[in-house]
Image 1 (cartoon, helix red, strand yellow):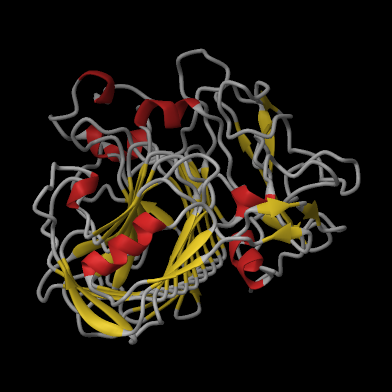
Image 2 (cartoon, helix red, strand yellow):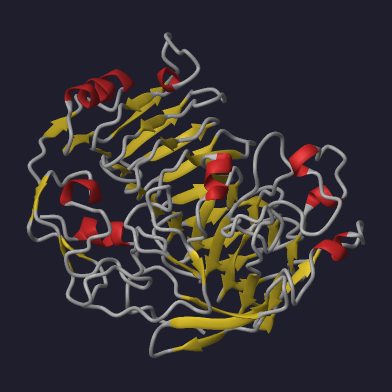
Length: 492
């Protein structure tokens, strides 16, 4: 059953599940300290303070101005909607210019981008063109087919099926068909393209931009390849929406230890959102999304065929595990063309998994949680797992109280079904039975213990803390559609 969400959650303070603060930053050192509490109170629209469940409140705009909210807005007065559900951009001004690329050829597009400034739009005409790695590639931004160099800019094709870019960019660090090297307060948007033949990502977003948008793009890899279609690195936040991805995934790679030092912020804007997209897979089952390095992401209202929900833990190389995630209101399909052996494979961190529906022959019949450092010899030092709790494991989050033990906030699952039958989280301990000592239902994760309050739009539950105290949690999903999608529809 799907529940409508009437009130936006748009706080850029530390507001949401369990943890509350008073600042309007991004959970950094300038924010007030987060405090562990029994269920954050319901927000009160009209008190002039942006609380969880609100995009803004009166004059408190969560740190945004017109020009930080959307790439096309350059000045004016941003306001909050009277019900705190989103932004009113009627007082904003879009003074940017439009630069028409002479063609879809790589050099013509880069020339138009180089001529554009903050607030401008580069329009790429219809056509079919091939982009390659520039001769001066130095291993970073110069390896992109087109480089967006830190300005507030919109790169706009003529639409899916009209502006078709075939990518000959090879795989490599920071190689991408379009690479946006963002700056704080300078939003970037890429929209209206078909990308084909990709090996390196079609679009890479890097830097601190918290209002990026990649939308209405169609992405397919080189034949017989599985690739990253869109990558988001560093602390960028924003939305990927209304895209179609074949045999490819979205990957989120933020800032490692720093990401794990910031408070838990479920139900807020502090994540990469992937919504209203279609993912299809023609080969062996693979991932729709992946994260590590302290990733925070939300995957919602998508359709995925022959693919699994997925995220990495701390086991890989020098990276930290995924910090937090929210999977909800998705439709998963196994069409019988591949072996759909699992629906989800979650290796660490915490979050929520609810209101998802699966159909078809998913042979595992469950949603799997693991922590591979329980049995992997390569996990040494900080990564080693020889007593509970393991670092970055399922059900653990930021060490808010500074006692050197990551705080317990269990992974929550409810109202997920396969062919109409309830499906729950399970520990993948068939080959490694010791896993069940480290990840346990009723401690590190909970199935179907959440209740919904239709009046407030909040989900509530409770759990037992490490010291045995009963802790009450309250969670509310972020406004849907994402405010950046709404703002784009309201641009003056």
